[in-house]
Image (cartoon, rainbow, N blue to C red; front, side, top):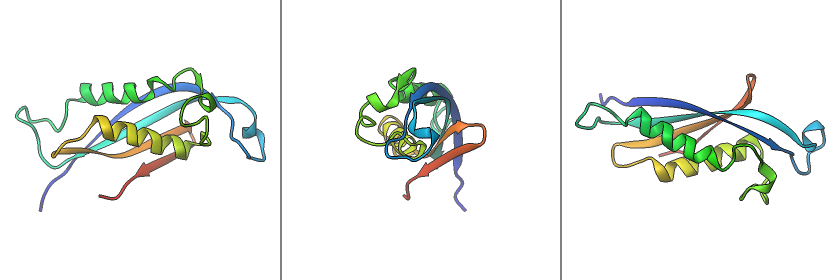
Length: 127
């Protein structure tokens, strides 16, 4: 049996948005303190015995949310065209992190975006 290592880091950002074509209160401009969980998966360790340095994973997570922090998401590409739902944010951040983190040993496995303490979405892609 082959083992796997699952790592997780969490970052946060604050941003406002409004949902286009939505019937309800969320069609009005409102804000969230978003929490983002990044899960990485490795099948082996490097020469130091790490899948990836948590510091590097945290830096990648922070870089991925940096252009969203303290912004109106509807004014940030691609959300100036695409509805800034938690689902679309999770897919966007997954792709941004996939480009930053990954090699033959490690990959981004999932991104979970929390709007609040009670509602989140987890985005994954099949291998």
